[in-house]
Image (cartoon, rainbow, N blue to C red):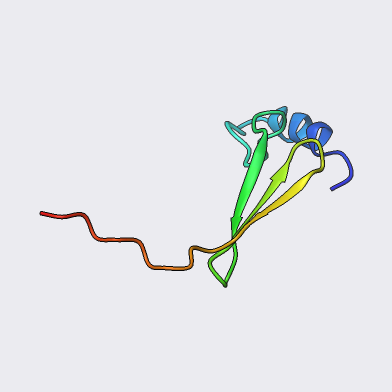
Length: 63
């Protein structure tokens, strides 16, 4: 999408449209879980971070 904010505004102006699944100017980052267990974080300023998958399984809470 070249201009999601303009698209959002145009769709919301259509009669009967209550909400749109475009969340413009609402989040600072998006988190993507990768197949290898790592996480990719894409920030609103264009930066991208990669968080490695845990090396050991998480411990079960004691009962």
